[in-house]
Structure formats: structure tokens, C-alpha cells
Image (cartoon, rainbow, N blue to C red; front, top):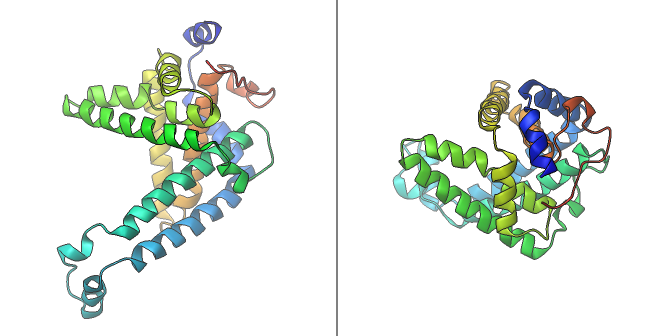
Length: 241
């Protein structure tokens, strides 16, 4: 109860979250941006390697791409799976860095129990379905679901022993009274990430790091509410709700 009582008296600050995200990006962003860039190159290469022959024929002839050439293939599925695993490693890394560790992206970022991967997949599938259903009802319910249950996935990564119910309960209760600040933060973060497209699209690798750090810091704030100026001064509370 102490956690959620604190939330009633302390509102999330968008500017403070983004400032802390920028500070972390200044320290670790270049390395992570390179990791993003290399992954995007590899993912793009894998996707291209599985393109059907008529796609390359269309490119060679300069004609418009045909529908079969744009259909999904095994390469798209492989890229999707790799992207999912890659994102887990990124968020696990950022949780460490936000808590003061200097250990950047490495194989340890993926060393989570197999059950955690499974629970995270199931949670995100259910989460995505609920958002889609919510958007069918005049959009607003979809936004509420997206914001109020948006931190269950990262909670599972941070608490491998937690259940799906634990994750959903944490996200719902910890975001109580914070809907509009969280929605505003999500919009601003998305705009920050999209500014990377201005720099010949390559800049998005760097601005994506800012956006992801903002999400991780918001989760840590919800986990253990405290003034943002004090975040990082003491270890974050990792107690399972």
C-alpha cells in the first residue's frame, strides 16, 4: 500500500523523465545507437535475402513492385522474432544502466529464464489484442488499455518470478491517477524518436535510445516513486508487488 499511497501525492514529471533519459543517453547512447544500427542492417539484410525472385525482377526492370513481391515471407517472420528478442536485451540492458551499472549491452542481457520469455510473449499478445478491441470502441478505451497495462511486459523482465496476473496488477495499480501524464509522455517521446528521421533516418538509432530510456525510467518511477532528482542516488526498489 505504501507504494500506491505515494503515487497519490507525487505526479510524474514529463520534463524530468526526458531530462534523465537524455543524461543516460549522453553516457551510453552512442554504444546503444551503434547496436541499434548494426541490428537494423542485419535485419534488413535477412528480410531482403528472403524476398521472392519477382521482387528483384521488378527492381531490375524498374517496374512497380507486384503484390506477391510485397507479401510476407519467412524472412519477415525471422526478423520479427529476432526483433522481439533484441528488444528484450535492450530493455534488460537499460534497466541495469538506469540503476547505475556501467555494464552495457552484452549476452548477459538475454540470460533470462525461458519461462520469462514465454510469459512476456503471452502478456504482449493479450495486451495487443486488448488494445485493438479497445480502439474499436471509439479509440479512448484503447488508449486507456495501452497506458494502464503498458508496463506489465517490462515488469516481467525485471521480475522473472512474477506471474501474468502480477504484471497486469502492477501496471494497472501503479498507473492509477497518472493516465494523462503518461499519455503525454508517450506522445512527446514518440515525437523525439521521430526527429531522428530528419538526419537521413540514421539519427533514429540515437533518438530511439532516448525514447527507450524514457520508458524504462518511467517504469522505475512507477516501481518506486520518488522525485526524479533523487533517481539513481539510491538503488531502486526491486521488491515484487
